[in-house]
Length: 500
Image (cartoon, rainbow, N blue to C red):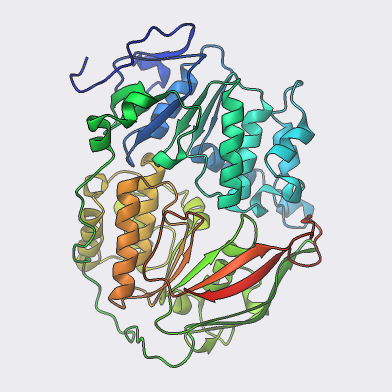
């Protein structure tokens, strides 16, 4: 046994999971080094660790170690795999209309065990408004709830939840916490988390991973009072280091005294399949303003971001001005994107090609998925400075898909920043990040705003992630008494703009 590994010495009755690092568990895939781990029916575990520590790998090891084959794992990787399946089975060409994928209802029924009540499951996970919506049209939070519903539909004997709260709004996160507590009373549960605030009331044990090794395990009570455990949750990483260099540019620098609005949206309307997402939205973002966009899952936050970035098909049928120019007046999409840096869950899901970490960051210079143009020595130098800045330089030649979700997220943030854009759009940038990298990103964004490197549009559910630079907030608020359905003729949310 490693001398820095702590174990719970209490005798565990009826172990349902036992891992001693047998090579057969995950064939040739990477594994977490485990001296000995067991879990009994009476225990609920939380697994913590930094980005790249092996949390998601350990989650898969737990699922594979279940000899009864009745464990269910909910993870971003499984969500991505489902998206890949829906894209592969796209029938748009044959049905002569856009195929939005299987509906939420169909995807749940796929896994539905005889003893599970579908209606109760839909009510528990608040899926009424999207139950007949195609998978490709679901918001980030709706997809997260769907994946949990698919797992619960199988009536699992062990439930493993990999970052279950990431991507969910505050209201549903509180509901989910209560739901997980209720589930944990009858079903052994493992939470893979990076925030101590996401511990369940019924968590009995905590384990900690570091650099692909299980280095700590004990009861929750002992862990929370342990000096070693606290050290594993802290870091002396300095987020106020100078930013990496920028490329010389022929474009004019960002001017905070520019008199015209950086972004101007007038009477915006977005609807599809008789469902109205936005209607009558007016928004002006002036120089020196940094905006937060908040609201429940599915309210239209990502739609708004995609309108601004040019990635929504209805952006040209609306009155949108960017940097003083009306969209649709002959400018190329690349001319618009040159002034923007974008990091979003949608972009993350698009990055399905096999490329290295260095290539992901380099692609930010060209606003492409991958790099298809010659890169100079200067391009590579700046990309590698960002890798060092984020502590990911040792993964320079590692394929993107082989990195942890949090590491992928950090690379995409660097991709958005590498060309020093006028406008930086960050949609849930801290999703999947451990406390150390989350603090680094928050301080980095504040530093960018303070030094007038870019203006910020920031979308986030997390109340813990507080940016000092924010000046305004656009809030989507549910309208009381208005029923949300797939055939809504008006948005079920009101919009409020406040100065912070």
